[in-house]
Structure formats: C-alpha cells, structure tokens
Length: 186
Image (cartoon, rainbow, N blue to C red; front, side, top):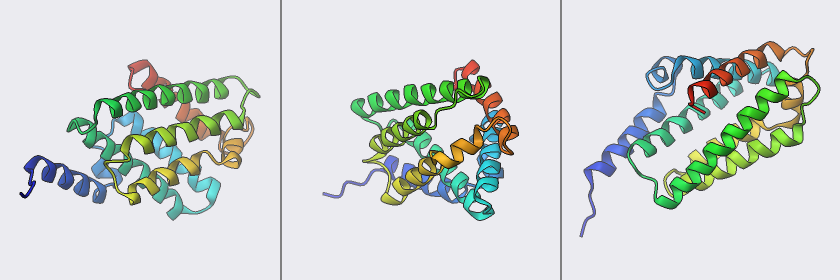
C-alpha cells in the first residue's frame, strides 16, 4: 500500500522552498532583528578572516538554511521523544556556549580556544544527532561546514584578540547574544 501523506509532502515542500529562499531579505520573515544583526556580524568575521566574500556568504547561507529547516521540523512536531531530549541537550549546550563566549569577551585574557572549540564541536555533534533521521547528507555537510568554520582555533584566537581587527564585530555579536539571553531566546 502506498504511504502517501499530505502532511509529509507539505513539510518537504516547506523545507525545499525555504532552502532555496535563504537570502537575507526573505529570511527576515523567519529571523528576528537581533539574530539578523548577529548573522551580519558573523558574516563580516568570516569575510575578514578568510578574505573570501563567497565563502563567508556560503557559511552564513548554510547556517540560515539549517536553522530554518530545524525550525520547520520542530514546528511540524517531527522529533520523537528521544530526539526532543537531544534538542533540549543541544539548547543547553548552545546556552552554555553563548554564556562562555560572552564571558570570554567581557573579561580580557580569559579566552581559551580549546574550551570554545569543544563547546562548538559538542553543539555540532548534538545537532547532527538530532537531525540524523530528518535531513539529507547534504544538510549534514552544511552543519559540519558551519560549525567547523566557526570552531577554527585560529579564527577564534583572532576574534578574541582584544586589540585585533575583529574585536568590533565580537562586541556587536556579544551585545546581540546578551539580548537574546535576556529575552530567553537562547
């Protein structure tokens, strides 16, 4: 018997449409202003660090696609009870990473790249585990691309250099992250 489900078809269509629409103007329908500002700063960090505008755009586009797809899965109640537990673990680890990133920014010379690298790698692994049964290997590659890019120890070291050229971006990123924490978003 054919197992057709209009709900499954609609969700696949949403994911497909959203993955092709991951441009700044269209994503603003799904992402709040604070998050958008953080993404803009992450783009600038990537562009200045890599010296490659197209690579920076690709990283942010992948980040947006993944966030939107996970959001679609969550809103459509696609995660099992076990996966919801993984999602909760991911949320806690993301919150811990956010608080650590802010702390390293606020207290000069406390930055520890191995701690940030570990937190970002843990977030990546939890997210991959969460979406394992729901997203394609291409999407898994996007997750790895984003997290591996931002957990690069050299990038992190330059980002947290108190007198480095990336410091103004870190200031804006942490200001936005603080706002998201205060709102309970992260």
